[in-house]
Image (cartoon, one colour):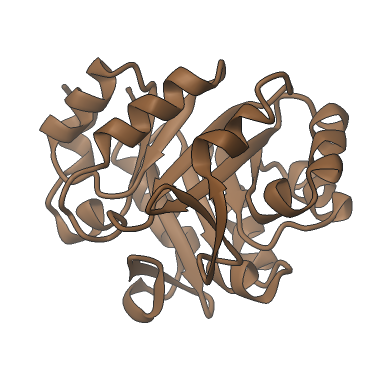
Length: 235
């Protein structure tokens, strides 16, 4: 099981939201790059970065902060949030980002998304954020009528690196993941599903692994100390 510490950037700082609510944020540091280095030093092998301002404003806002993270650490990173153009995808990859996560446009502009996956094979990650099983977009500010697994089925033949599946209701709540939904999504697609939302214990991680998921993103549990990264890495 690969563990990806989450670094969410809002107004240039490292924060965590509760259930995707921008009004319910906790600030954990004013330097995302320093936080990235911290997780690397504790044994992280991959980082998940989200530009929350970018997700809301529909264009990258914290691009410089992301590039600073890439320069600071020696482990791969993936970035999501506000990525709406080929130029942005190319710029991030040229800067050293390992994988680019695209969510909203995969739903709203599927032809463009498919084109990007062929231009950048095995470099794009399909980001699906769900609320009550339905796809949420625009930084979780809007909920569509499209079931998450239905959206995923549209892209099973594409050269994707992975799929990040986030259950918004579980995110930041420290109540455990939605195991049934995560397992169903992994059965739906041929590429790795990265579970996100609610992971709060070693038992959660072991259960996800037992269900066949190869990776998970952990956010609040690491920042609050519910899980210690060094303990997980050494298991």
